[in-house]
Amino acid sequence: MEVTFVVIDDNISIKEHSLLYTLEDKGFNVLFFLKPEEGLDFITNHLDLNMVVLLDIQFSATDKEDGHSILKKINEKSELIPVILWSGINEAEETFSDFINNKAFGFISKDANIQESLIPIDKALHFLKTNLDNTIEDWIIQKNEDKDIPIFISSDGNSFSLNEILHEIRTQSEIGKSFSRRLNELTIDLLLRKKENLNG
Image (cartoon, rainbow, N blue to C red; front, side):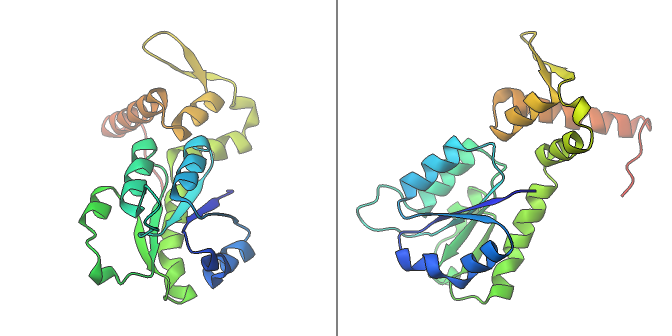
């Protein structure tokens, strides 16, 4: 699974942080944005990528956005992107209720050691790996012949292949959300009717 780490921080020296070097050493693509608006634009225009966002909380007074507003806007675009707050602010000194309400995935102090920092990152990677979209992608990789088979018909009569549904889910379109909801309902229905069993 290819994952891009999007780092949004207005301190250029953070590019040299050991955590970012560690992520690159692990083979991840790391992109750095000094301007929160530019980071948000990248995320908005690349919703089909597997992304983890490392988001600073405070930005310079000249920026229109801060960590609170950026997190809210990312969550409005997609609930499939784990956003980890990465800040030099002590967690106890900041009010985190709105971050929690906007589904911040976790918090990493910039002073934390690598082992501590990787705990929420590993959780975020597990979250991505177990998402429906990556399950579909794994299926396509294993059974590429299935990718163009129509599997979903929308309320307006349009049919979507497995490959097309993958795109719709990742871009969080209404079609993608509808498919995910209906698939969950179908799975529960089959389990309750004992027509299928889940094996761990």
